[in-house]
Image 1 (cartoon, rainbow, N blue to C red):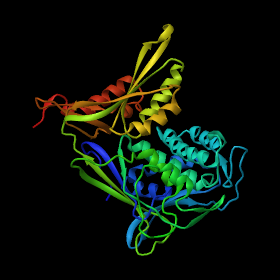
Image 2 (image 1 turned 30 degrees about the horizontal axis):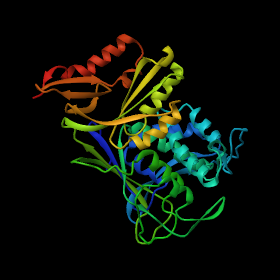
Image 3 (image 1 turned 45 degrees about the vertical axis):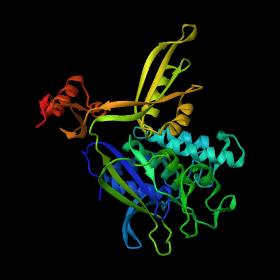
Image 4 (image 1 turned 180 degrees about the horizontal axis):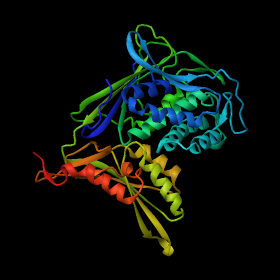
Length: 408
């Protein structure tokens, strides 16, 4: 069942790690749930893969009798060559892969999300091997199909933001896994380093059940403290399968999509604030965009300030879902020059609201206490229309049917 559009409320996505979590399983499950994202994801993947290394493929199949999708790289038949910047599947430096993702001209938010996933991997490897972050040398992620998984997952996360992600207890697995460093215990050291704080279960089925790439995706998207609270409407689900066959059970990751009704009233939010006086306006804008696209972020606002010694400064205020601050703090420290953050939890009151589509644009409709509905077209959709008068005409067409009319 694909996820429907035009539902009200906050999107909640729960990942059920039946067989485990790997990058390809995550991408397949989410594209099964949101097939409308397939073109975007495939275009982003194509932009980072070098010519001749292959193409991404999404194929239907079955795992233990359950319909699913599988995502992978179809190798090219033709031999291909690489420039000095194109490290082949024998390994790549973190800095090189980050540069490749950041410079690929991807869909909005994809690069920031992809680099976030990659950074979680690099930080774990740096800790395990005792090297500086910039000196981390990947092997498994140096494979083009693993880099493809990172970028595809980043594209999906950016397209679905702001969603709240949760995950089930993770299957522990057992035994050894063969890597470029030789045989390593399962879960791999990078996996356990990345997923500190997550809950695990032992279902007595051996093998690697959660890969380092899968772990990095979970860390980038899920706060282990997040749990779904209150009633929510099931709107869709998707199933992605791995390549292994597990004894007596499907090797799948299931994504279940809910919409939590926004009936107005009080709700808790996290407020994160900090000030910057040593970044340019261009750098501030880029940092704000990257933070705004992160999971859990509701809104980012900026204020111009006068700092100490009369310096011009910018004040950031980030509105986020409860529990997001531990995930957002590392991102903020990476994207800005700030040396510290302030945070607090506040209560906000919201009106009942719904999202939908009209006249080819996404719209948001709010119902006010007297029953009047007000509708606003999504500014990102209007931005793709050339000419101020055309944008205004399009907005009026999308907003007019319910603008300032009583809700019957």
